Amino acid sequence: MALSETVEQTVAGLGYELVDIERTGGGLLRVTIDLPWSPGVEQFINAEDCEKVTRQLQFVLEVEAVDYARLEVSSPGIDRPLKTEKDFERFEGELLDLTLKAPIGAAAAGSGVAVSRKKFRGRLERAASGWQLLWSQEPEPKPGQKVSKKKVPAPLQALGFTLDELAQARLAPVVDFKGRKPKEVKNDQIEK
Image 1 (cartoon, rainbow, N blue to C red):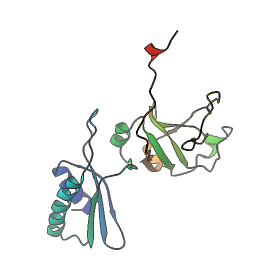
Image 2 (image 1 turned 90 degrees about the vertical axis):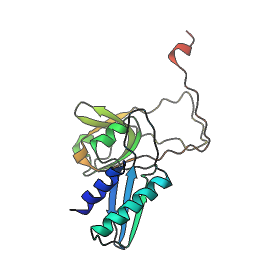
Image 3 (image 1 turned 135 degrees about the vertical axis):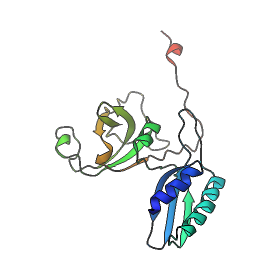
Image 4 (image 1 turned 180 degrees about the vertical axis):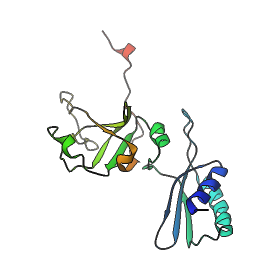
């Protein structure tokens, strides 16, 4: 049985989802796990989960005679990779960093986007023919920078893609150190 199948079966048997498996030159075997996705439920991997999987994998890998120097089991982190259709469904509406296998080329002609561009950051949405990323060429304001209320935001552009066109997709790490979110005004609260 292949290493990836062995690890995936072991991780799934413990009630977790295998996100990634990586072998490095120094004999390191890195396994990334997550909790299975349930819509509306937000769960996180903790140290006890990693320890539980590590102990079981050490035993299984010894039985299977897999050669490795060190085993590392971890959570996917805030820049979690997205690899499967299920991952994209789970993180629909989130901010992503996307790298295409090939530059966008002639599709960018006339749009003001460099034809050699492969990297994009934007919101993930479902499209009729797969997925799309809504993005703007305007850079994000720097922390603490005042933005004029009169400033007109740059228009959003849509980049349609399929999973086989991607080299890499990750959640964009967004960290809010202030801990306060601006209040959203609901439609029924707007004065007429």
